[in-house]
Image (cartoon, rainbow, N blue to C red; front, side, top):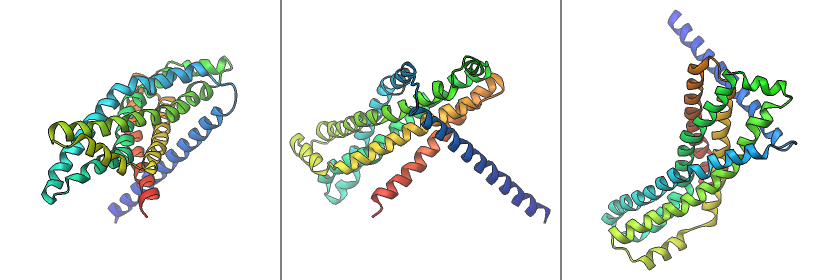
Length: 261
């Protein structure tokens, strides 16, 4: 009986902890969004975050997308050749890249690179009292540190995903033409026939949401870190893990919303 009560109590504590964290993150996100639309706006911080999130993440996202597109083409050929359906490979590649792999892989790469960096940077500022110093200088830390980064994530990741879509499809094309002896003209024609505006649009919507979630987790965990260097490390790890889990969860929800019918 005592073990059952302990189990129920543990589940209750975990549930309450989850609800508290969800509420705190929601309030943090709403506060950050409200500061985006209210002056003043720190453009220099925004452009620095935009470059860090978008431009400097481009090499890793580009390579990931290129090789992922090639792998999809190769694996699809292995399965479809058994049913003499090789002509469907171009459609499968463009569908998988634009709907799923482009946004998800770009998001995961950016979460590991940018989300961790934001959490470490803001966390270091927190444990060294630099955020408190901003308050003493009459500078709102949410407006200066959080709002520009949230906006940068919203803008930069869709641009990254758009490039990832092109490179993913190009990777599939290269493998199909060079390795699998497809006709380049026929493959391009099949790709264009399979390409739908809705697929690209939904992928970009996912990317904008993913960019917001990644920067939100990085800022939130860094802003609330404590305990010196160890606390900053824990905040960095928590930011990447939380962003990755939320990214995959919201990917399912958006996919179910747009493509389940």
